[in-house]
Length: 73
Image (cartoon, rainbow, N blue to C red; front, side, top):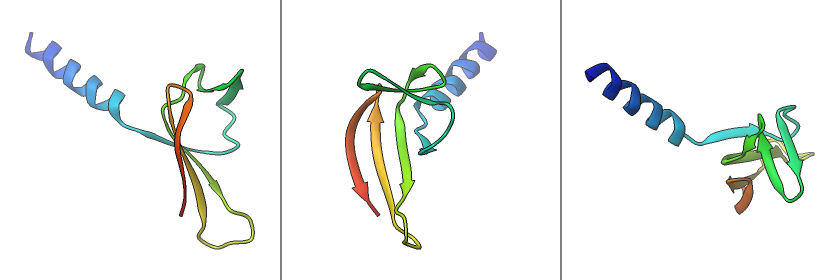
């Protein structure tokens, strides 16, 4: 029972961690209007470097394959 509880807690923390994926990752696919990562709806941050800049990035937040917000850094 104790091992099962530890496994559940570890899986919960792993599942809740947000992914950060770069534009162009071969595991990303757009199906209709939803974004998938490794055949599952993408939840996390999609990052793209702004061309001709040294440290500017566009970050787009997704939840269940749908954009929730975007920011320029």
